[in-house]
Image 1: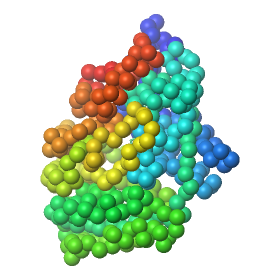
Image 2: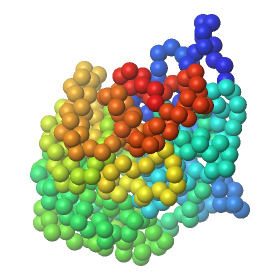
Image 3: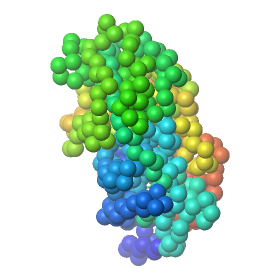
Length: 404
Ligand SMILES: Cc1cc2nc3c(=O)[nH]c(=O)nc-3n(C[C@H](O)[C@H](O)[C@H](O)COP(=O)(O)OP(=O)(O)OC[C@H]3O[C@@H](n4cnc5c(N)ncnc54)[C@H](O)[C@@H]3O)c2cc1C
């Protein structure tokens, strides 16, 4: 791969769907390789595999697999392309049971810095394959296709949700985390802190506890959610939803409502070994003080099972939280970004790391390094030197454009 710009060799950024919260493919100078037009997605029912190009969105992949009775832990928002998502690890629908999405990647096709097309798997270019499953926005080759191993599609998806005033955050999270070990791994349990939906009652800020069950039948789904049916705080609930039938399409519609187009967004992440009552107690105070009422905090309780494979991605703590700054007025940029940093400062002393897909790489040079185990970070540095010795591919976006 030779990119020349004004007589000098230009550095390259790659973009699949452009959904990076911090805009990592957007760099001054150099050259952008936009692969969003690579949108082929084929399913081979005989081998139970799917081959997907990086511009395909999670919703498109889910729909295509659904036609064959299959599913994959695609991202929670249907519009996110698989390219950057799979390279980062991928915490998607039912990842608690199915593992990070990158664990379901069997093979990738890529083009290296010297222009060589390579196939990477456990047996070919195994070290590049290791890096491609987690390096995210610091990966040092351009991926043109992924071969995935889907699983049988759940026949029933149901949702149970409780909504409480935000002042009940500690008790609500204590209750739900206490019963989490009794839930099937096929229940995706999560907390959300934010502004009440219109009509939710007098509280302006709320905490929701949501369980989504992925099951083989409606009966099994309802059984999975049974531990969530009763709650010691139910007298204080502002609203509740019980065993509501869902589809992947309705899950995507709910996510799309959280992230409407044309707003302004920033996100940051934290893994921690502290419990959710401590983490969300601190973040609740931030949500109450948010300059934009659209900002929120999401916290999946067990976002991902511990992957069996050795990959660059690894969960770095027992708990995981993601504050999102969401606003519409450019005049609020400084205040809202300041809010996001302040929210993170409240919980960072409890942190054990970040998640490379959604962390704010512009917040501190250490964000990228702290998104990996020390061993994985050292290995990424060594592999980058080997596969891209001249640093053709842009590395992690950070205040000093840090290279691993
Ligand atoms: C609304 C929304 C919801 C999200 N939900 C989830 C979620 O549920 N779970 C989750 O894990 N993440 C989630 N994310 C984060 C998302 O996974 C990352 O932002 C991911 O990078 C998006 O993929 P993309 O292809 O759009 O990335 P892009 O913005 O196109 O690229 C990001 C970086 O990835 C690298 N890259 C992208 N494509 C290639 C390629 N083909 N070859 C080599 N390098 C490449 C580049 O370094 C690039 O700078 C969400 C993001 C948004 C905006």
